Length: 480
Image 1 (cartoon, helix red, strand yellow):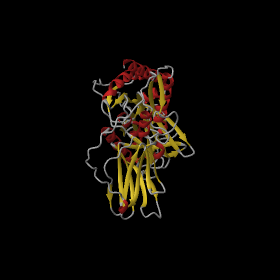
Image 2 (cartoon, one colour):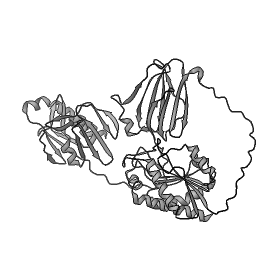
Image 3 (cartoon, helix red, strand yellow):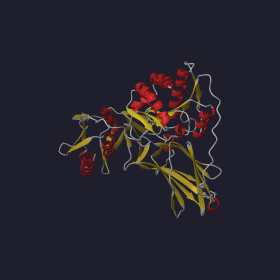
Image 4 (cartoon, one colour):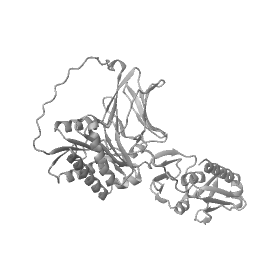
C-alpha cells in the first residue's frame, strides 16, 4: 500500500509539473488500463495542478457497478462488499457508511463524472506509471497473489461488536442510548471550559441510519436551551481501528450523573451533584440459607423447552450489511421454525419467550423459563465482527450441567450450516447463567460475513437449521 501511495504522489507531482504545458499544447494525457487504451467522450483534465479522470470507464473496466442519482448528483460504486458514495462538488465521500474527507471534490464535465487521480488510485487499488515523453498514464491491476495455505489453528476469540441505534434526550434530562451488545465499564472523562463528560464505547459503531445524521465534521450535534443541567451533546465514530463510539455531554455547573444499564438500553441521568445517590458498601453478613422451593412433580412425561429468540423490537441486534437485515429477524425466524419441528413430537411442550417482534429484558426471559419449570432452554442468536472474513458457528454454555446439551446440539447445528466450526465455549451470558435447567446459547453464524449471511437468510438453510436443532434436542433428551 505504501508503494502504491508513493507512486500516486509521484504521479500527482508529474501532472502538476506539466499542467501549464498541457494547456498550451492542448493534448490531454492518454489513459491505459492493463495495456489497453481507454476512450471516453471526456478526456482527462488538468486543472490547478490537479488531474481529473473519468471514473466511469475505469470502474466499468474493472467490473465495478456504478449508479448515478441525478437528483442529488451522487455516484455510487460497488465492488464485492465495498460501497463508495461520492457527490459532485462535495469534499467528502462515504465508504461502507463511514464519512471520509477528501482534498478535491468530484466534478461533472459533459455529464461525465470526473474524480482526482489520487482518489481513483486509492479507491480502485491501481498501480500507476507516467510516461512523460508519450504523455501516457498507464494503470494496472496488481497481479493476483496465490492463496496462501492457512494453517489449522484453534478458533480465535473475536471481540463482538456493539451497535448503537439511537441517542436521544427525554423530558427528565436523561440521555437514552438504544443499542445492541454495547458494554460500558468505568467512568467518563471529565473536562473543563466548557464542562463536559466524555463517554467512550469501545468495540462499538452505529447502525447505518445513525451515520446519516452526521454533519460536516462527522458527528451529530444536539443543542439544548433553558436546561441548567445540560447545554447539549454530540456523538461520533471517534476511532475506527479499534472501533470507538464517543458521546460528549456539555453539562452545567455542579452537575452529576447516574448511569444505568439494561438489556438494549443505557440511561445517563443528569442531576445536581448534591442529588447523586451515594452507594453504600455491601454489608458482610452471612445470609440465611433460603428454603428450597417446593415443586410439584411432573407426571405427564412431557419435556418443557423454552425457545428464546434473542433481541426484538427496539433492540434489533446486529446488522447484516450483506443482506440489509437485522439479527432479530433471523433469530425469530429460526425460533418459529424450530417450534414447528418440535410441535410434531408430542413428547415436547414448546414455550416461546417471544413469537413476534416484541422486546423482553434478559431477566424476564430467565423468569419466564423458571416460572414454567422448563426442562431445557435454548437461546438463538447470530454474531457480528468488524472484519467480514470472520465466519463460523459457535455454541455457548455456562453451567457444567449444560455442557452435554451444548455439545450434542452443536454437532447437529454444524451439519446444518456447513460453516466453520468455532467450537463449544463457556460464557456467562445471563440467560444461560441464571437459569437452572440445562441452557445453551447459539451464535449460528456471522451476519457481517457475506458467506455466513447468505446461509443465515436462505429459506432452505433456515429450514435445515431448524430440523437439525430439533434432531439435536431429541438426541439429548433421549440420553437423559
